Image 1 (cartoon, rainbow, N blue to C red):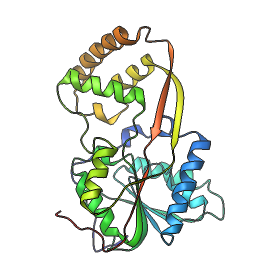
Image 2: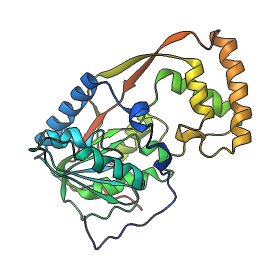
Image 3: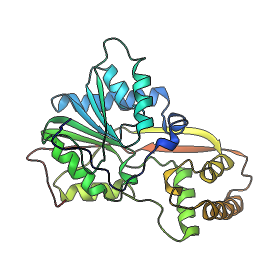
Length: 277
């Protein structure tokens, strides 16, 4: 980390409130996680190796498995409780694991030097950032020419996407602060002269119920409801439940929920794109 660039906190979401259930709701089954981490490690080594910068490192669900494969990770996050959980989990790492260093910092003002990383990772964070383009430029600044950006821009399953879209219709406005989907990210990166190369395919299918999703939305588990006050959220979830029951039937019936991971790699072939920040 670069002490010449002290952390600057701007408007962002902190996941401190989710630390108790984050890994249960955003984690991946071990075989899928192993496949993702193996693909990321291959990209990192092909770009010359670490260290790697991870924006929104959270509880270390990506950083710790990479470190177990010998890749040093420097992680930033605004949520101190998430970083504390990462450090707790890090005590269980294999003795020969590479280090994971962490720092509390804002994604739009990274306390790192220019071109010092072989790779940068951003998983399930760009959708949270109103100024996500500045965050991407910060990653481009931090990664050396020939390095690679590894981004998973959209963590929504099919049911999550369907219900969150309906919820936005009910409240009459967008509830997603940052990047909307992988296509929007790919178009922006193309403007920077970078081509998206999808990784995978990786997907997860879980058995769940619509009632489970609705209860979690009502309980404020997911970031797209955090800008709603309690009364608005409750009323919107009541209407969403009626719509879901009308469309799908029994809300307690078990259904399949498919989550297709949208990891993509962007290789920097020349000087990093700077853009206007």
